[in-house]
Structure formats: C-alpha cells, structure tokens
Length: 133
Image (cartoon, rainbow, N blue to C red; front, side, top):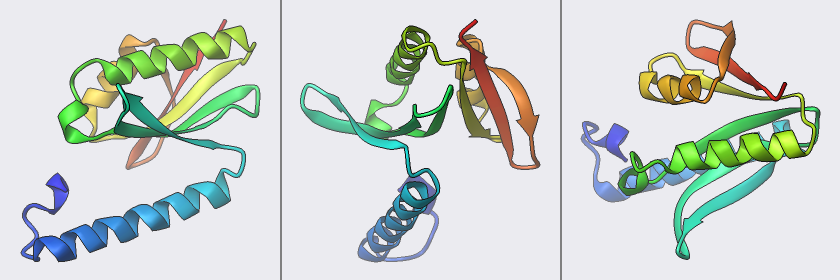
C-alpha cells in the first residue's frame, strides 16, 4: 500500500488493484515454481507475512519473502532466513538462492550479513546464493 500512496485513486480502487496484483503474482509463482511451498508467516497466531520457497532441488530457492509493514525491522526476516539456512544444511542442500531488487539495499545488506554472495545480476535484480559448505 505504501507504494500506492502517491496514486490519486480512492482507497477501494487501490485495494482492488493490489489484490489483483497479488492474485496474478501468486498464480505466476504457482505455475512457474510448481514445486514451491506458499507459507503464511505467523507470530502468535497473527499473519505477519508470506514466504514462497522451493526445497525440491539440491539448490533451494527463496522465491519471495515479505512482511506486513508493521512487522518489518524487527529481526523476523533474519530469523526466517537463518531457519531456512539451518534446514538446508540439515537436509544436505547445496545452497540457498534468491533474487533481490537492485534498489532494495536494506535487503541486500541483510543477505550479505547472512553470507549470501552475489552470483548473477541484471539491470533490475541481483541473484545471491548462500552455500551450505
């Protein structure tokens, strides 16, 4: 919603647009990443975010992770990613891979703190990988 703030639409129109975008994105993820799991992240029974992750191959793929605005900047992303790293190691995965938008410097810094390394890049995204070895 914060990205829609400057858009001069009624709140109902913004909500409808965002819901439509979510539905399209979800259908895309489900069709392109057919082995991925779609998980609702919770804290004390409250939905706080979402995670799409594919653990079906040797190289695990974090497709998307996001938190509602009021639950960001509280270490939850760090905790979820550390849990994924621990699980990947215990399941003998070779690595964990993800993409991040170039302009998302804060997320890149988090991934770097978790020892993810840049392995590919485009004009808009950086591919980062953490090796279990």
